[in-house]
Image 1 (cartoon, rainbow, N blue to C red):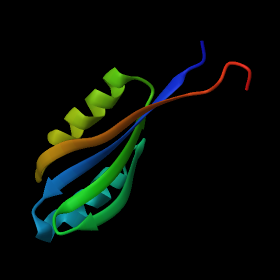
Image 2 (image 1 turned 90 degrees about the horizontal axis):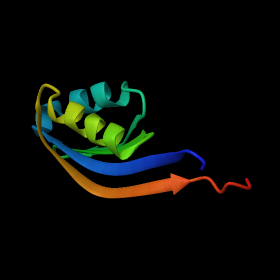
Image 3 (image 1 turned 135 degrees about the horizontal axis):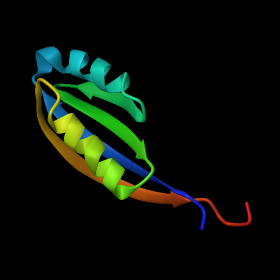
Length: 84
């Protein structure tokens, strides 16, 4: 069986005046990509090797300073075909 990539989109909420700082810290984390920052919302895409690792990433975001809320928006398992 080929390895799967778990990809998730999450919204991270922070106070609007510090959301850009929160986004910069998140963007510096391996496997995390910030797509937008607006009015205290930070849109993040996370890629991990398993559902458990993805959950750990989300828990890490929840414990970041100044983060008020982390909401899962979308989760996909992307698996390479065996004959690729």
